[in-house]
Length: 379
Image 1 (cartoon, one colour):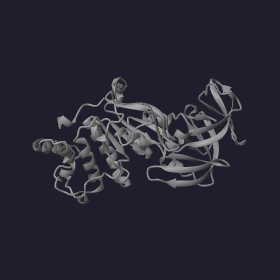
Image 2 (cartoon, helix red, strand yellow; image 1 turned 45 degrees about the vertical axis):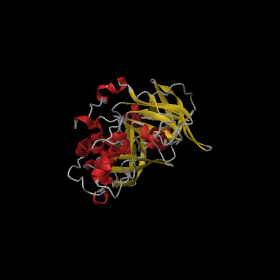
Image 3 (cartoon, one colour; image 1 turned 120 degrees about the vertical axis):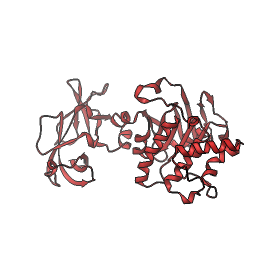
Image 4 (cartoon, one colour; image 1 turned 45 degrees about the horizontal axis):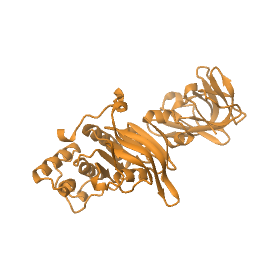
């Protein structure tokens, strides 16, 4: 196993920031006719990092992956792997391996033959092939299933064969194209943990493209949110989720409870926000620098940042009133949909408890949150 493993740097000790980048993307542009699919983006991926590119369909994330894999060249800019430009380098000459959404296994070849295929194309001696395939299958927990055909495997096992086939070539970079999209929800969650474990064990540098927010946040050291060909924000999952830099990022990553209004001034070093609904009081949010009064803005809060009470409390920083419209039981949590203005329903997530018995549809409630949790996006 040692030949497949290195020790990846850890985010917890900050070592990614001091590690030379495996991938450097420098202002790449990719056009498809009149459409600009990738619009001058730049970023780096460090050695041993799991980096996910997240965005809706048409954001440009797959074009970035195809350029890294060598299936397309950028119209402008450059991309480097281990300090070497990959412009015009064909896919089979790049130190990368791509795991497809469909796995792309050869249906007529056994597990062993699928994993060994790339090594045989490189004319690796048979004894070395046998040992390297064994190591790869051990890592993905498929030893003993070498003689099976893909059709005799579960979806999760097929995905692990595809991973083993990529791992056996010891790539500098592993590219993952919606790697878990073909799996059902329960298996998908299990494979998120397994894939991250394999990546850390092998010390792989991974670039994963997905539109699945939970998947990206669970597995990634950093995520990049793309929209209309541009990178809107890059950072650790928690930072991007809790401190989105745009309303699009806030909406795309989880539920964004929103309320339109305007900035009306400052108080105690904070920005004063007045909801458009005349029935709601002014609210304080963290200071928004350089924004004048009467500027339209939107307040955003996450469902888990809110607390519900049946009476107004003076113990929290900010309070809005609302009326419960729906109560949804979701196993480990209760979801409340609360009308806070004529056009806006907010979602509040809490754990079921005896104290929530009075929170029924039609009841008037108060929503509380800490001033520091509010995010204000100026139009």
